[in-house]
Image (tube, rainbow, N blue to C red; front, side, top):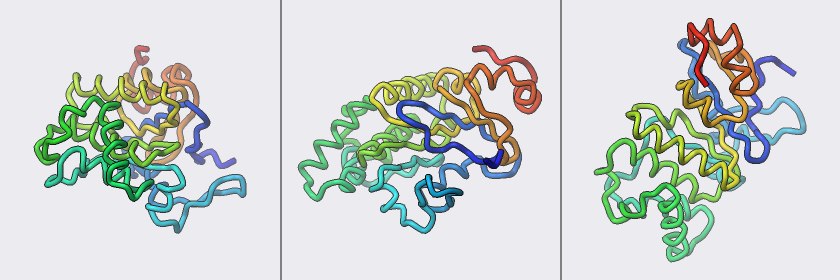
Length: 221
């Protein structure tokens, strides 16, 4: 297998974190899979290239965006209902699903608030709730902790770990090594857009190439 091949389809409950490279090559390339942009290399892989994003979503894969995109002039619950309507035509059912997901991200108390008035940390959680409302099997989180303060990052980390317990497979694209050490079952390290190494969080943190490329010193677990 090509050394640069990324094992995006992690089995079961495994959380895969991608430590993005620091060069100009986009770190979010793996997140383009739900857009139908990347092609598989063998017959055992699902072919997504050429499929419209709504089709990929119905197949069970959804992504969030690094730059959050709430429907600012709609309420929080209506934003999440947009995701739920992928699976149902009933507004009643969609609203029930939306409230379920808002409870998971601990934002149901914000359900009647206009989404445009949310702070960045809650916008990130709203994005996750809307993705979960599509009833996915795999969620790709694109730098979901980017731009957050320490407290907001902690809330996202706890949410990711909670989603793992609920059986969601997650691919997390992230730069924060300490966060990666906490949430990951397996880590793929990208450097300048190419795979540098792959392994458990501890194996990656102890890898001399990773230390040289990113850390400058041994990561604390």
